[in-house]
Image (cartoon, each protein chain N blue to C red):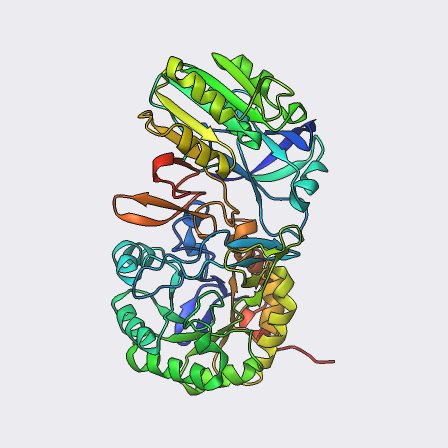
Length: 254
Length: 302
């Protein structure tokens, strides 16, 4: 891990308030699914980098992608970055997710979907079934990209304007009994993890979640991005950036 | 002849760049980016007698030209530090400053004793953390408390003691004098400024702790003025910090009276920030053939 200078190949809007950026590096090694990158903004009034999950990558072309929602001033600055620009980027950061089982169920909600393509890319030998949920049709992203890499992709929208109607957690739960995956990986807002906990209650399959928290250094030194987990030695804070972002759902204190 | 070495309370630093407590952990993570021996010194995360969990998240909020944090002195405790980090740090070839904190005067005294067991070269007394309810800044506000806690630690601690001063006081120069009176070997300043970030949509503070400590380039003018004020108030060396991002910031702090500096928030913007600043400073002194010590306190007022 080190800081690298990346060349921006592409930075374009792909749906309602959501952008897709492709970064090229001189060298790029050992990316697992569900790791993240940390971009130094081209704006000196902002002292913190912006962390995004590595949405996808290409080991041969030495590229890594970020799919981000424009939520504040920092991400707004990022939309001004043009192809050909150079950015200072840290990657790959975080523990990532390397499934042990053969059949994997991926569940993504909203921007949480952005972490799924890289998991499929990093695990070409696994049978991956993706369930992706959005508020409405205008928010749907990455369906096509996931379709190329996964055994199946099921889309759900809260209002039924596209795909199946309802929460993606419910749709995935309905498919679970027949599918019998070896592992489940979920990424989305915290409310979704609570829903998964509830509707997958009693299910023995290991469920992994990727957590998000406001970050400082991104490398484990500053202790600002902590989350609470419950383990054999009791409850305590761990670092989302270094100890995570992927944890077993059972140990996360929601 | 060009020179970057500085001496504080008998401890020699190969250059005046020290990483600030709380921004650098115990050096392990940044050691993956560059050899820590390139720095003058490192300040550890604030250590307490017992492990501390710290405040609930979110603990950070970015602000214009800076950031607020409300970590709340999360640390693994002195026993863990001595077992896991102390020996590793001793081999890094860099001055190690152990930052110690407490909730009561007895805590500080106990920490001042326990830290004698470590191989740290110096001790920085954290009496200015704005993020803990008891202790912390309570000891750093009134001059008589600054003097009392400094003296109490000096009585038991065999290592040189740096008292870290809070800017959230009526007159920081009085507190620097109080630290000197209490026997401090040096003072470092400024710790973070107390502040708040607010979300107008939710009408709530962004930080779970409501308040936090402001740091980053936006605090630099405040810090420079306070370093100059303290330079004119005490004879003991001053370590300056507050928003240092480039080698020219270092020069400004030294001209205002700092004998060494600490780099904090800049480590978050760039993990190699402290290293880069040290390299740039080395280039500056060699190109301009200056002894960095000759700059200290040379501010010419208008």
